[in-house]
Amino acid sequence: MGKKTKKFKAALEQFDREDTYDVSDAVDTVRKIAFAKFDETVEIHIRLGIDPRKSDQTVRGTTVLPHGTGKTPKVIVFTKGDKIKQAEEAGADLAGSDDLIQKVKDGFSDFDIAVASPDMMGEIGKNLGRILGPKMPNPRAGTVAPDPAKAVSELKSGKIQYRADKTGIVHCPVGKVSFGTDKIVENLRVLLEAVVKAKPASSKGAYLRSIALTSTMGPAVKMDTSKAASFAGMK
Image (tube, rainbow, N blue to C red; front, side, top):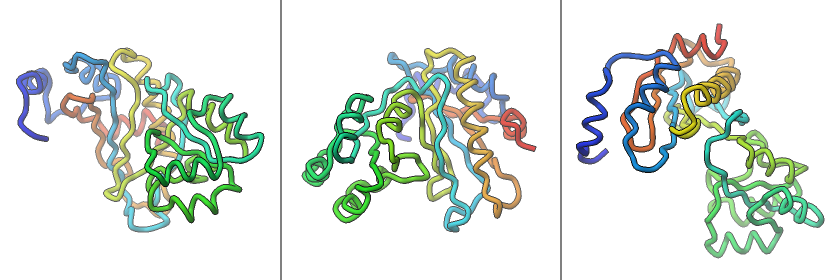
């Protein structure tokens, strides 16, 4: 982060940066210290006790937040035939087959998530593998689907993807400051439960190493990992 602004410094003075908070108190604190003029997104950052270099310790999946994230993602769908119209009717921002592949090859990137039917994956991999990168449709993320219209509906209604990055940290939005504490806490419960259930069998030691909650512009608030684990039903 660059030079801290006066508002950021003022936010830091409103809580104990070294203390750890239970889930509700962490959410309350993040909402209290949010200072931007826009409705900031609340984000969670979970450092996991995994070795992301090992294929059997990948943590990745999807879950549906009961109150959504406050942002409707832009979704494109690679599919064929009647499924193109079905995807569009389900809310896809764009849907197509070879024409959509060419559009993305030509530089189109104004989308958040790409969904594909299985019969399109060969062409997508051949033509867009390097271009799509982390947006590449993936069965584990629920974005390779025989019924792409259903996948679009779920994504538009609050389904999110979570994935540990190369440093073993999961970064996810869990709502907007305006949601209020209760709705954000409910979203957090669902996400934490999903991440806990995704714990690799080969992961040893503490799984939830550290958790921080932030708003888009605000400082990080540390969450008590033992209380978060209990909150998520972890034994």
